[in-house]
Image (cartoon, rainbow, N blue to C red):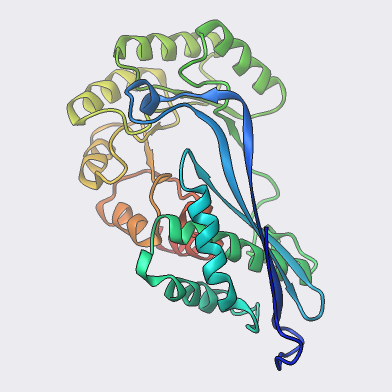
Length: 307
């Protein structure tokens, strides 16, 4: 844990940032998570998530709490980067959120404007937005101009590749009984026939009315993705997620143009500019920006504006 505060004789306005506290911890997972990247040896099973928290307080005592995260690697580096750039916020007006995002980028410019550096910035950015919402006595969604009171959600945690098919059916039914609106299944096994078998079995088990999505976690090459997308057309899927490498803009665009089943991607991209390339290439029917990975709410809104 690291705490920063302004010196007693520092001339600050009542609205300025006077105090920042950073903390990090590891959140253990009840069960290790394995997807296609694990089965192919590119990554190890995920057993924990490194969390980064930033708490910001003004001289008037208004506080905001933000978070970011890192999976499998990068947690200590993310915390170290946040600790180095945090002093840039002391004395600043917390309402200048966009300007402060840029200032934090310049404070750590040597590491670039994507990746671990902006993920650290994300914790500060979320804290600033949280502070602004609290001062306005609004939820963040209301502050941002919400259009609806609720949104449908889906469950992924019951559909990882290590889960046997029988248990997958139990997990999916339990999720639907709790009011969760859809089920996402992991695919991308070395034997594609196993993926087809699981998707077919789950469609038969849940019926045609249940929204089902699949996520290949960047496993397939272009020929395999073409073949699997063609086969999956018959199962009325909501989307096929990350069938190709996250940065294969042209490949995703070709799939989106060729098949009726929507293509979803963007989760692993680390900047608004990279999402701009997805949009420019028409690579996805569903964009999936990850707020902390992008650097917080500020760049997330930039992606939304581009879309």
